[in-house]
Length: 489
Figure 1 (cartoon, one colour):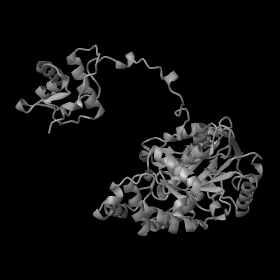
Figure 2 (cartoon, rainbow, N blue to C red):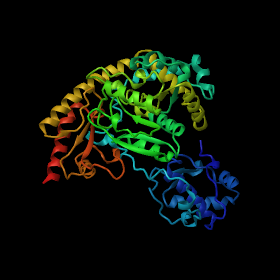
Figure 3 (cartoon, rainbow, N blue to C red):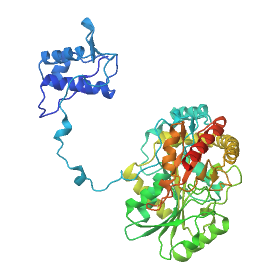
Figure 4 (spheres, rainbow, N blue to C red):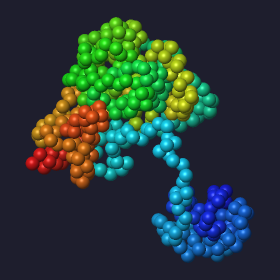
């Protein structure tokens, strides 16, 4: 079948000739990938009728494109996109950007692009030693059973679940499993009215911040902390106070007297992996009850506690309802799933559901039902057990390699997790170190992005073992140690 003529549109008030405009449309479509090599172009007659031009105009434009090797003519069959089409135009086309009249510097009301995320190359899988956090290892994922669950989800039995717009509601099968199987492992009891499915933990944090915070309210966050949270809070324009963490996580005694919300990662602090002791958790809850602030608990990596049993969630110790609990399946399944959940008192969940509906109604039904089957049929538990065994081995190898190469850990991570928080010698900038290591095929995460602006600590960096094979860890660590030694001379 030929490419539809409706693919192409002439722009009004274009000063180029009709032939040039048609050539430009075709070239743009080929270079952008909309028209692929070997595809048949619309006939000159159909394209001329669609564009409202003479047929000879299209024919001449096609002939010029053939001479420039964008198209080939095949006798009476018509014109086709050439397999040898150039990667850039061989002739000059008018630059439409020169006519742009919108002053976007003045027009944009709020800026979101100024926050620099953690720098990870898109082709991270091509690197030999990818010590980067939060990416999936396809070798550990149960592709076969996930595929079977997806097929089951699109079957006739579940069609109404997928095809119906549930408006503000969520998949009841997924909600039920979370309530009866996931939350009890954290000591949490909840009702369906107290849970909301989200598009991952970051979406849950955004919803929470939007509801709880205004320009007149104050939030406390950990320092260092998850960079995405700091960016979310900056958009609420609330007063944000950073509290330095220690070996046991967030110290409650350092919280200010006047406070509205505290954001914390008590199970595995991000990024140091520190675990908050139960006594400190209780002290934090007592302060929340006395001072009337809300605690947002991001239960970061609780599933990956393979060295010791995880400590009870803050939410499980909270009789007053002061804790909003954030959970996610991104680390235990795969990050592209973008599926998480909020657990809180019903009045808060009611507002959170209403806010979510303004943006996306609810996460896709197919994803929710597929995940529900994967969880309820036992595949999730099997995957967590498999990840625990592999991570335990990788962690042991990495600990030994770090010790042999004299590299310094700054965080304990005694419960497990999937990364190490590291610190280089005084005077070494981990951002510069990270860029040099890429030449060796090594990816690490510089620590600057985790700290409060203006208080960055350049010597910190994070090494994750979730995406790298055990056999490659020793050589990768050796490369890091060598680069650090070179930088310290």
